[in-house]
Image 1 (spheres, rainbow, N blue to C red):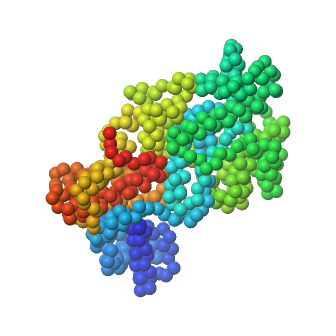
Image 2: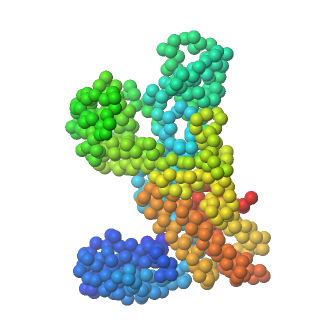
Image 3: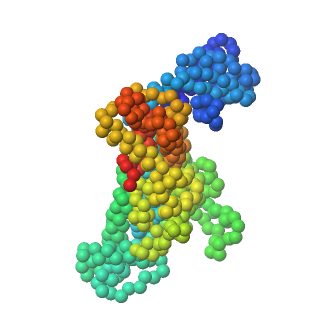
Length: 572
């Protein structure tokens, strides 16, 4: 049940009547006609832009179309009144019985708000994809939460979603990891070691070195690198991925697939992807223009193998092979995305850190070329997170020495608070995460405020059960009750907007607004006993009051489920 979609259908039907009556021209494009909440709730329950959108193509004044449309809509049973405002906006006030019907539907329909706009479209959401060189840090937390919530949102709206982690185990950084683990391995054998610049000195590798000792004994001690590097590389990568999987589990993130970059090398997959581009005359030998601004001291013009990415919207063509014949980092990324296309995905989404901004256009160009512009790629960049505690920057974890880990954050506030707070800003805006605010029990803490609303409902229902009262037909009379119902009506519309825009933070914002409406009604009940959900000594009146809070709980539970947050049964 989507009242906004239903009312848009009524508006389109009224426009068809006007067309049949000759009051507006036939064949007008109504795709941009919308029905949405009015900017000022005092103006009505919904507003439509139909007259403003159609005035120019119809050759009519907006006000004239709005007046004619208002007369038609006034006769619709669900519409209590239709009034024209300003140059031609049309405000609608719905019949009171509609709100009671909505509340009853929400209470009974646990899947309220679910949508099929995805139509089973196969979507690959790739997120986290951290280098397997250490535990996840706070930057990864935001990307993990955002990607996971986005995947859930798309699933909620009828998409077939695959959650995927790309393991960057094909680059030089994994060799550095292997050498760092080897030093810890020697240390486990009682050797004195020194961590050179570029190695990973974090204490988290001590256990890995000890495990390697348990695995191979003294086999690699005092051996040249060519004896142990590849084997230690595999051992260390596996150990780090076990650590990362455990970090994700703590945060409540479960991947459908882990895809190894290394699996692309030596298998012909990179070559196959490049050949597909070559067949389109998009691969050539050439020399790039010097970078704008101050030239690097080591820059010199040299012939390279380039991808003609400017043919697909990029600013410059991109190297895919170095002058020495080795692949650039971009080449395996091309092959990886070609593999996604080959797996039959209809849409690709990459969730990356803000430092990957320069990657967006080239990767979109590659996907466009590889899929013949059939498969869209949306790259969502997550900005930095600033952590504070006691008014000061949050200090680094002891085990890592130079960065704050996922576990440092979760240990402070728990996974539910971590997830919700990471979604209180749009992904491309910097986020301030104040640990003190995150655990504060006040309206200023959105996590507490939403959870408190759900806990209040559960408390009411426990007391009603003790009284032996079951929910009955909703009885909504007060404007504060209608305000809550009106906010509930926005949920299906909000879900579809958020899914289409790939913006799960909208769900967090909506839940706060819904909680605000609910708490306002609760507080009104402190002064007006007739608004309380439990009507003392009157079981019938109580039954009529219970459906509204239950409907609120249904929506909050669904919304928190999308965000990966467990609804609170009670507050402590």
